[in-house]
Every structure is written in structure tokens, then in C-alpha cells.
Image (tube, rainbow, N blue to C red; front, side, top):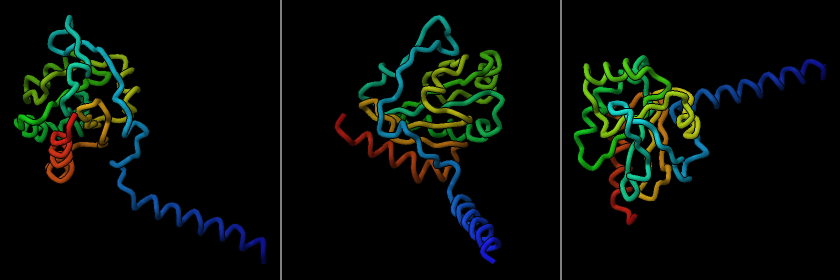
Length: 177
């Protein structure tokens, strides 16, 4: 009888863990970078590859880093909402074109509009790896001191922007940097 109860107990434990895991929101994956300095980088700008951009120029400002690619369905879904978000003058929106073709990225932004103040290209994916990007789109909010305060996985929609992103940016902008 005991030999039947042990596999049954193991099965019940596995079902419990599965049920707990299914209740979690996959967009909220804990990041070990939350509360730590944003990795520094110097990457070529998409539209002017002879010039580079890095986060040091944003010290003292709250900013968003949005990792995307031109062939990403989720990135295209969030694009109109990023365009609307970019109209808010309190937001510094930086695009990280992750392991993508510059030609395709430029064509997409010219066709659908460019929500970003700056777009940098991460051709080899090294900066994305430093930030822990494993699927695009991913969005990071970095505070005035250069600390990552939030990470969101998946496309941003108005609900998430209005309930989480904008209130956090407002709060971080009010903090003394």
C-alpha cells in the first residue's frame, strides 16, 4: 500500500506547484537587476551610426529603455501606445533595437512613426544580455541615479502604462536625484 501512496503524494505535490505557477503573471519575472545600477553601454545610433549613445547622458533624468525588433509581433502591438507615451514630455524613451537589421528597423520607424528620443542598435545582443533581455519587447524604467527600478516583459498596453508605468515615472521624477 505504501508503494502506491508515495507516487500519489509526489503527483499531488507536482499538481500543487503547477497550480501555483499558473497563477503567476509571466510578464512579471523577477529580475536580479531591480535596485541595481543599469549596465553602462555605448552603442551606435540607428539613424546616425557614426555617433554613439550611452546612459551616462541621462544621469539626473528618469528614463525608459525599450528593447524591440522590427519583426516582433508584440513590439508592433505596443508601438502605437509608445507613440502616445512619447508625447509626454516627462518621459525619456530610449529604444534598444535588439539583434535586428538596421534597414528593417529604420523602415519600420519611418512607416509607423518613431516614439523614441534615441534609438541605439545592439547588433550582437551584448547590451541586451547585460540587461537580462531574453524576449522582446522588454521595458526597463531607470531612475535619476541610474538604478533600474522596474522591468516589464511583453508588449505595453494602455492599462499597464496608465496603472504602472506613468505613476512610477511620476513618483521617480518627484524624488530628489
